[in-house]
Image (tube, rainbow, N blue to C red; front, side, top):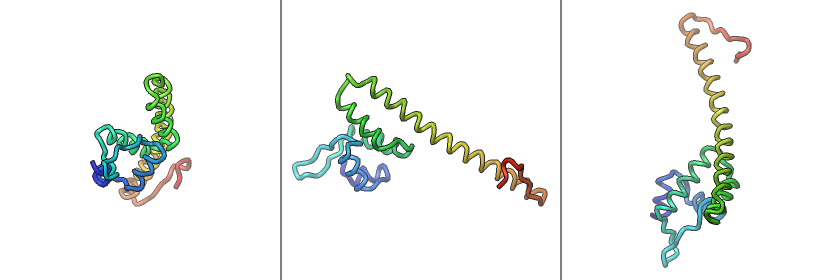
Length: 129
């Protein structure tokens, strides 16, 4: 696949994709004799992983370290597992924030739904505003 096709597939810019490769978020991509990046299925899997992890808030530095460990081979399996456990903690923090926001929105919507029926907007003091 070309860089354009990969970017369209994942909704990222060519600059982002080049950056990911330059800093090591994805391994170096093979190039044609003309110097054009030629993304293999394995490269695309790395891009998918990077986009997924970044969208979940996993820091770039963690992704760089994961790729570095992967490239060192099977002797790093435990370290890579530990990386994934740490990444899961980061993602859980994001989920917790979203859940708090969702709960807050649900509460507010319920108050407004009641107000539409009764004509009076009432807030529980501990959840006001």
